Amino acid sequence: MGEGEPISDATRRLSPSLLLGMLTVPTLFVWLFLRRGYPSSLRRAAFSYTGILFAVGLIGRLGGR
Image 1 (cartoon, helix red, strand yellow):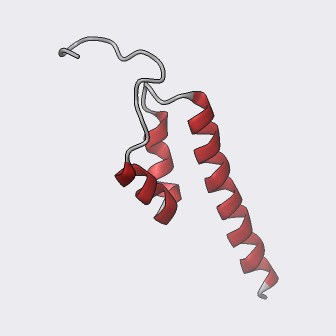
Image 2 (image 1 turned 90 degrees about the horizontal axis):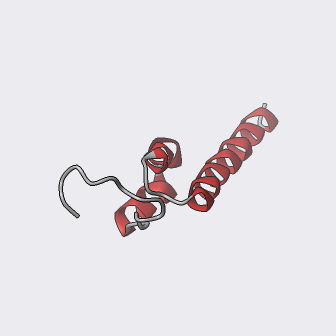
């Protein structure tokens, strides 16, 4: 792929380093899935995972009072 060529949909793959970052610090790494080229199913999964972890953390914090 040369410089200046548009990236078509679903050409990016989930790299091991991005997966590791997503599993360890999802609120930071989830934004990388908004870049062009990731399939919408991968974006939905990443944002769902982040949302579920956030909700579990919030419920745990509120329940611990």
